[in-house]
Image (tube, rainbow, N blue to C red; front, top):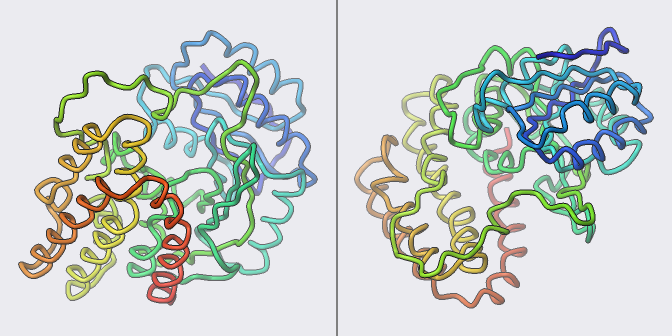
Length: 363
């Protein structure tokens, strides 16, 4: 099923949204889109067979909004990665502006401001922006300074963590379609693969130090499905819980491998895992201690053990030994550090990580 309204002949932006339920949140996000001062864009919604029965309500809103849009309902439920890829495939624009269906643009001038930045720093193939909490306004600055960060495999390896949150990532539409693949379906990080692949190939990465997104729309009486809201498992057995964290190293290496020199590959693989173990991994240990339990977090650690997280990566013996030691150390700290202490220390460590890897990866 496809419904289309073409109000813009040659859009500059395609707002690409993988949709599944959460219809009220998506409608609110589209209201903000309708208020944009910059009008040369379209909305591309790929519906992964939503079960809330509100597709007609969404389509009617889009038709009445005046927005240029295309809505396509997939024939079967295919999960996040495939659905995001399907939303990108709908784009007719120069840039895909990726969006979660429960986030919205930060203001009515956001697209105009991003357009001006892209024009100022062209040519650009990938752009990453900041985001802030819908309720508190607290900003997450994944980009610390506006400007061209660089291009090539090393830049991709040093910036892959910036793709973890999908909203506010912009991709060259033609290149995103060229590199489309279902290889990493199930990773829940399709945007990370495509972004890193385009950068590694030679596309220039632009960082925009501006919060363009308000994350996690709140609507009274409605809630989104989230890992943080799932009931605690009681009693909780200690079993291996892989989730998808253990796939990130292989996903990023696969994205950059065709464009890296053989002499670079072990170094880059080590750098990818170093970031994963130092910054991504400890956050999720503590997070699951808070939303589930200590025993559940032990399962996360078991899922990230070297035989899983290092599998298939190009590492020499020395790298495997010291990274395995780092894994053990981070696991112990993540399971034992007081959660309040971690919460207090994390922002400073996050800023430090950004500065170190930005300096190492800029080219």
